[in-house]
Amino acid sequence: MRAKTVLPAVVMTAVSMVLTLAVVVMWLGTAVPWPVALVVGLGIDGGWLATLAYERRLAAQGDHNRAVTAVGWSFGILAAGVLVAHALTAEHSAGAWLAVAWLPIAAKALWLVHAMWERTALTRVALDAIHGIQQEARDEAAVARARLRAEAATEETRLTAVTEAGARVARVKAKTAQTLSSAWSTLETARAGEDTGRALTSVTARVTPGVTPRWELPVWGPSESLAARSLESAPALTDEALDVIVDEIRTSETPALSYREMAARFRAAGHSASEMRLRAAWKRVAA
Image (cartoon, rainbow, N blue to C red; front, top):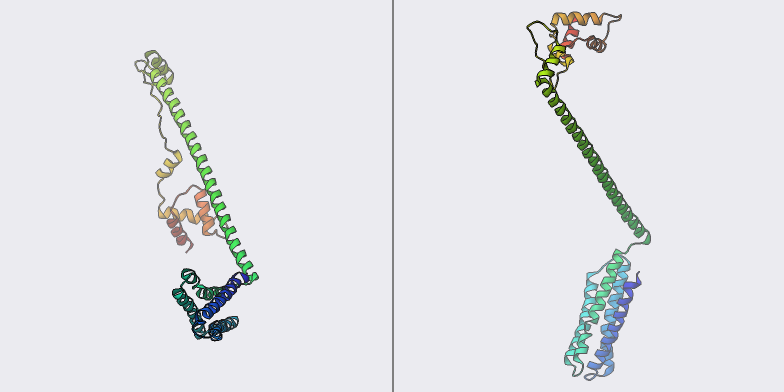
């Protein structure tokens, strides 16, 4: 993985240094002796290479120096400036020389990318741990989605079943109401008929001279529970009567019953009183 970033930077640096040296020798060789031009070219490339090596040493130690970085970029800009100046003054192939003038800056940029990769690089163990965490999160998300889909399908099935059951109940009620309505209509017709009415009257009550009781239709409608009516119509016990009943139940056994046992037997005997009145009577008789 490290070679993916370092090899392009090394290749670009080598090409840039060779190109810079060749341009300096060709450009300045006409004005000064070629050894002087060679020294100038090697000085530019050497300064750039020295600062690059020092930057790499600091990066290996986990350190960074802004001054060294600035010097390195200065040598890179100088090399690019030499290439641009040569391209602008060249009589032939000026466009080609200008097209490769960016190589020193590109080489510095590639080393910057490589340094950023090194600062963010992780070991195989850390990468495997991160991959495991991501896979676990994806698995949990998939399980949660599957659970939600299953719950939604179950709820849809339940609602469909409830709806169908309600529809069946409604159809049965409608059919029953239609049957009752038909029977009621038949009964009403029989009651209104002269012959059938006389016959039904004769069997519903004892025949009395001069009296012909009219046969009435049964009541068809909601009826009231007898237990509810008797419970509502039962008179409330007075405090004295309630005290007597509570005391009798409490002392019916030895030792005396607790309030909970007394209350259970009180209601089982068919007596009725609110919880507040019953507890007050207990306190009065137990005092």
